[in-house]
Image 1: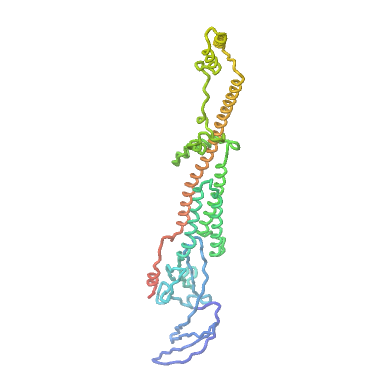
Image 2: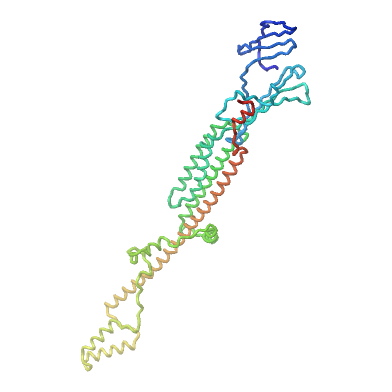
Length: 423
């Protein structure tokens, strides 16, 4: 068998023995590495080249399923100079595999199988070669602990962004922190893998999927925060948003709206029935002014009756009071004193103030109700995105990682070595 690009200096026989008409000649040659190796030459022209070579071969690596990949390296031996009639190639001891007797276990790869084939080509029957197939599979423990598990946990942290309340003010901060951690893992993967543009590795697909999901979660979070702090002065809620996000979606997700708003809770607290600030005043807590009634005598009438009772019926004062009483009873209008007029004006001012206060409270309640509606819409979107992102993240994780063909297979390396000639 000829070996390409090798130079040899062949020496003559060391000794020749003639025994029973049998001749054996011993030769030696010096290869290009200055190592002496032997050639056994028999009288039947059967030559045996005894040499030890350290063969290094390059192998095309397919990183499609990295780190759950399996590679097949091919080593082909043949003659470039002589054909099959001149050089006969055969497998040693007719073994259809590579002998693993002296194989040392690797900490990175597991050997799956090592078959060997003697190839004879139909188009050129005189051309033969021997091909060895070395099938190896990567050990995944290191990559699972240091790369897969952290990436999966980080991807599910994106879901927790929607569980954080919008009032906390840390939703966007959490999303950006997760995004930065994913960038670090992408840089780590780019250093581990060989630079190639032919295929996208499995772990790179998953990191890219998580990166996209985290970016979308940040965009949705910004929208949720914007809707949470909307008010009646800047935004008016469309009817379809009110119908979809306040009635249908909460019922589908089994959400119950809080019954008490902050304003109602403050007004229903004990000791808050008469707050000094108008924002904390309820019309139900204020005493309603009693309407004037004909059965209730006025202060002027009561003073007149008490004055008439102090004098004799024939007294002029008594007659004057009786005349005034008859005149007041026959007339619809009352003649009030200046003090009573001022008191009436004060009562009318207080009543007007109470009416304005009632209108203000009603407007405040309406604005607070609209603000609470927007907050509840943001809460519904938060809950919807929580369920949606959890489902998509789980499905994407299972769909991408389970795409590897050998992810659940285990390799018994000792058994394989024993099968292929190991001790």
